[in-house]
Length: 73
Image (cartoon, helix red, strand yellow):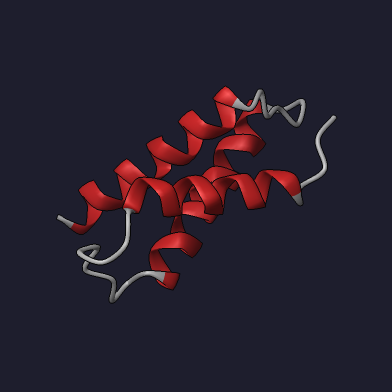
């Protein structure tokens, strides 16, 4: 189950980044970055049950913050 959750987080972050047209110039590096962001998000929220917080809103805020603070070409 944890692997499925991580895969969904990676997919959500990748989708958000694609929608924002995030591209560093190297898609393999970008995917590595998205995986690291997903790991960070999951670690930050490892005890979150998501009954009181909206997952989609939180993952979008997280991804947008990461994109906004990461230099793109």
